[in-house]
Image (cartoon, rainbow, N blue to C red; front, side):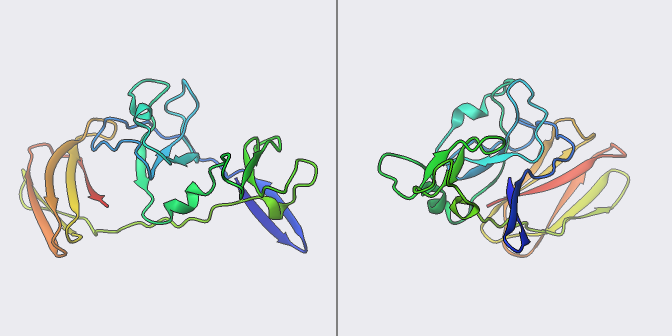
Length: 207
């Protein structure tokens, strides 16, 4: 959900537009548990491959969400790198006097609002929203064919961070881990000997 300000005091709460659903890739390639601070895709129970624009942040360790079953497979795709303590403040409790949850109907069945608001008096200014910034890191992955069977990967590494290079012959198939290495801040290379004429490579960076 997001709040749109049309100006002149006119506002509206609208759902985020959904695009095509993505396939659940739990247990394909690197695995990340639903630990505190991680960000994971959400889906409807029993429909594990219908994730679209819905996601959540784990405010506690939730390993039970890692279960590779139809109802409990939530794939982690990122993590909070700063400000997690602010999300903790949005946790309603007996001792938290800065927030409460109201059922405002429609998409807002669990809306975080100021403690003085009621269903009959709530305004847009009472709604508590989260501002976030997504950080993407471009490591400039390059692929060069050295011969029919040998290809060289090169990328801009990040110092003292783990990098994982993987390969798959077809999208949807399992990824094979080719290399796990710590970055040194310079361009790094890896040569892959493979007789297959086609395939896909990916490079993952571990924050």
